[in-house]
Image (tube, rainbow, N blue to C red):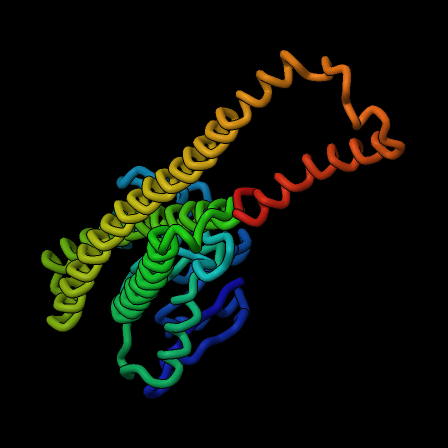
Length: 325
């Protein structure tokens, strides 16, 4: 799918699936989502660049993600997708700047690619360029990443308070397994965010060097990139802090589970010691008495069966009541 964005007065107009034979030359942003080979060739013909393939975008080498070719700057970053869902994921997105025009190539739907077009459709400078749109996209990406970390931090704090609540309110194996699953999901989310922040930081550093050496960036744009660099660095530090906190919470949870298991095993050991003397006496003298009134009981056999069933059921009910099962 191909979308072109054309400045119209004080707004940026989105052209959905324009004709590939006549792409608007005044478009300052061309967004390619899961593009076909025909769409790639149409954009390459208009902009005079080569569109990277999906395999090229997934390369992890810096030289394959950040480079200059034929005057165009190619930048690929890993962005978060579906962070609010049960299965968050990352996706590579390429940003290509050529002759003040921005081309983006992606194979997923990061939220900033929905927010920025809506924002620019409400109002933007009449002389907006691809560089300005790139800054808006990166700013939205950083804001979105900050929101994800804030929610993850709040969830980790909630889990931490649950673990360290009074022992009388804990002790359920199912709640422990649920807490462990939450910790695992938050750890996976934070690791993906850290991966995304590292790639964004490298991209911003690459552009910042280019802005320092080039005269086509305005003073405001250079200041915006410096602000983005500081924000990414602070978010990276916060993500590292969250990762350490999640590891601490995980260790604490495993420690609580071990304590609960030790308490249960200790109780069983005490019960075994208490019952050992009666068992010893019964094993020596059991059934070896001449006078045993129970031998004459008419209903002795069914009573014994019922006693055996109760001996099995009552401990199970007791363990469930104590929330050990």
